[in-house]
View 1 (cartoon, rainbow, N blue to C red):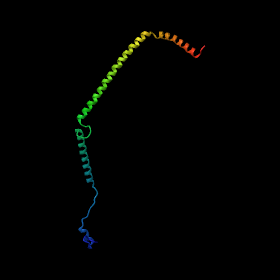
View 2 (cartoon, helix red, strand yellow):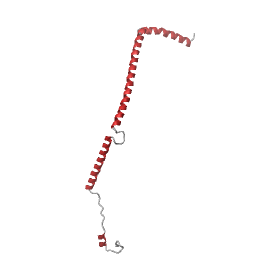
View 3 (cartoon, helix red, strand yellow):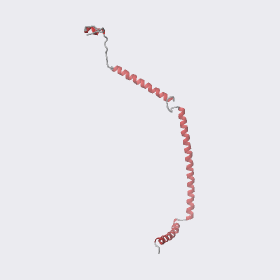
Length: 138
């Protein structure tokens, strides 16, 4: 065998000078240690993000003052809608009262339904006569 300097060396003596590299797999205790460390790091990271969002420093509309302003704007918009709907209800109530009065006046002027049918039937006979004279002339 050839040594570092290029000279022939005995096999047994050649390995005494060199350091051996030992490759080992991850043992169960190291694997557990890495898993526990990973879970702790993820937990701390999640807690930090939660606190950032809660304090309003993070990205987005998380500021407590902006939430209040947004809610106040929504309440004002709904107040306008409610006022408009109340006005419409009042108008419809007024129209309903006016229609009831008109119906009462109409019922008083027409009278009973029997009198109405008596007045309509002669008009129907006259109309039939006109239609028959137009369709079938004498």
